[in-house]
Image 1 (cartoon, rainbow, N blue to C red):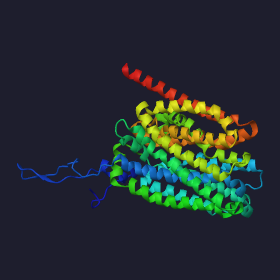
Image 2 (cartoon, helix red, strand yellow):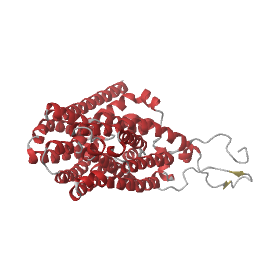
Image 3 (cartoon, one colour):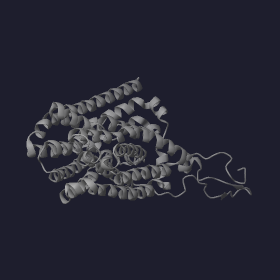
Image 4 (cartoon, rainbow, N blue to C red):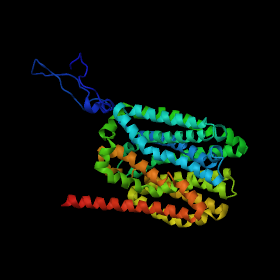
Amino acid sequence: MPDGGKLAWPVTARERDYPSKFWPTPGPIKMSANSSSTTTTHDHGTHSSHEVAPGEIAVGVVVGRTSEYFDFFVYGIASALVFPSVFFPFAPKLEATLYSFAVFALAFIARPFGTMLFLWIQRRWGRGTKLTAALFLLGTCTAGIAFLPGYVTLGMTSVVLLSVLRFLQGIALGGSWDGLPSLLALNAPKGHRGWYAMLGQLGAPTGFIVAAGLFAYLYASLPLADLLDWGWRYPFFAAFAINVVALFARLRLVVTDEYAREMDEHELAPVRVTELMKARGRYVVIGAFTALASYALFHLVTIFPLSWILLFSKQSVPQFLIVQIIGAFLAAGGIVASGFIADRLSRPRTLGALAVAIAAFSGFAPTLLGAGTVGQDVYILAGFLLLGLSYGQAAGALNANFGDRYRYTGAALSNDIAWLIGAAFAPLVALGLCAKFGLAYVGVYLLSGALATLAALGVNRWLRLKRETVRAK
């Protein structure tokens, strides 16, 4: 090579992340027995490598998702129980909660932009730099919220700062996509993809159980004045600490040569969003709408009921949180069961059947919520069980549509859009409609999500049959 052995052209981030593809490791120099000359041969298959097992990938997926969901639910629970009083004391309780839920939605609006920004960072500087920057930003924003003075101290400045930090949390969550769920699905043994797909989804109930448990303890142990003054900040400190641990745990996995080689072999690398939308845009939309039944139910059994209980019920908040924790254990069981079901029925059929079940549940939801303590508890437990069964397979069920080249970016962006249209405004819309028009609108909201999922699955099946017909000709 010219320049004393240095490359005469720049090395891209992709070449740096996946050196085995662009710069094969040379094998030993072999001497020809019939010639006095020396011949250099490259034995590309002889270099040793550690094959990454699906179980090892699953550990990284579960660790990453649990830390993200704990952070997610700490903010979500606080937005229902604490932030209306801390940041919006100038408004009546209902309006203050609606304002709080509006700020809550900002992270979901920001998330697709965060995905695009950090995919660009990954293309330019590599996967490790991208993940470090994203989780550092997430931890900084979480700690910033923990130290943020309330409205009494800073006035509207506190609301503005809370909104900025929440928006930046969404940017960071978009950037935290590491591709491990896609790698896990592609490495799953034949006939067990549903089982391995559900493992990362266990982070949601696990994160909720820990976050809800912390708030239940604080709510039961502290006077309300102390909880609103300083007690609510402790879960945010815990979220910051967990983010730090998760950062090192995930970096230990995703920046190794073995993982780089696996990602390279499956072409799990970012492409420009414009290229993705031009080539596979329809599948981004279909993938987003496929998850709507599950994502609509997600906040209607976790965040929205807390606001309803606090505003319109006499039920104890700590006791209700305990019921939700029991529901989260049921959801975890449902997620595990979804793996077995999907491996027998297929993931799209499982999602379709559960969308029908959620549509049926939407007819009973308003009655249960308005039936007092027993009815509300039944709503929570049944809703969490349905959530686990559907959510276990909701993410990435149709990612095969993207093909190898577009899977990494397509999976991230379709998931972001699903959260935005399915879950971002669910607490805000549900509480606003119920307060003004009655609980029946909870059922309408759930039904709309279920119908959207069934429509997306139907369109996907039609497109698949059309492709098969074209190939047959």
